[in-house]
Amino acid sequence: MIDNAVHPADDQTAEALLRADLARGDAMADSVLPILQYLLAAEDSALFSDEILARVRGMVADLARQIVEQLYLGEADAGQFAEDLEDLSRTFMADALLLSHIHSLALEWQMTERLQTRMALDPVVSPLVQAMLASAEGPIHGLAVSWLAAQARWCQAQRGMSLPLDELPGDLLHRVLLAVRGMMAVRAGTLRKTAAERLAATEAGIRRRYDEGATRLSLASRLLTGLGGASHIALSVGHAGVALFFTALAAGSGLRREAAVLATHEAQLARLALALRAAGLNAPDIEKQFLAIHPEAMLPEGFERLGVDVAVSILASGRQGG
Image (cartoon, rainbow, N blue to C red):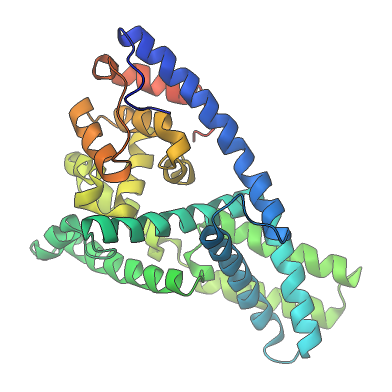
C-alpha cells in the first residue's frame, strides 16, 4: 500500500515499489470475481461489504426480472416465473464480464455517496456539468442535458438497486440475450415452437428499442470527447464528479472503465497513481485526487520524477488493463 511509511531514495526505487504494488493489486483484483461469485451464492458474506453484495444481487435480479417479464408478459404462473428468475440470475452471475461491470457500478455508487457526504459533491450536477449547462446552446450543451438526465435516472436506479437493460453496454446486452437463449434451450431440451417464437420476439424487441448512444456511459464518453483538448479537466473528481472522472480516467490511462473504478479501492493505490500519471496528471494534481479519494494515502518519494511513458509501461504490465 502506498503510504507515508515508504520512502524510496530515488525514482528507480519508486518505480520498483509501484511495480511490486501493482503486482499485489493484480493478485487482489484476480480474486475479486471468484470470491464475489462464491459469496453471491453463499449465505456468509462477511468477507465483502454487505452493501456491495446486496447491490450486485439487486442489479442481477433486476436484469433477470426484466427479461422474464418480457418473455411471459404475465402468462407464466408464479412458480415458473420464480424458477426462471432464479435460473437466469444464476446464469448472469456466472458471466465474469457482466458481473465485473455490475460490480463496478456498485463500487461507483458507493464512491458517489461517499464523496457526496465528505465533499458535498452532487451525484448528478458537478461543477463541470454546471459549466457545460451554462454554456451557449450547442453540441456540448445538448450532450450535457442528455447526460444529466441519464445520470439522474442512474442515481435513482442505484437507490433501488436496479439496472435497466437499455443501460448496458452493447456487448454486454448481447451476452445477456445469448445467455437467455441458452437457458431457454437447456430448459426445453429443444425449444418448442411457441417458446422459440416468444424468445425471438422478446429478443427482437429489446434489440429494436436499444440505443447504445443514449446510454449513460456512452453519453459520458461523448461529452468528454466534445471537450477536446480540455478533457483533462475531468481528471479532477471534485470538479467533474465521480461518473465523468471514471470515464476520463479510463480514457486517459487506457484501462477498461471497470478497472479504472476498481483502481480506487484501497488495495489498488499503485494502479490509481499510475493511471492518473499515465493520463497526464503531474504529481501535485495526483496528490489532490488522492486527498479526495484516499486522504490517508501518500505517494512514494520519487514519484514526481516518474515519466508518463514509464507509468504507461508499468500499468500495461498489469493484468487489469484494456
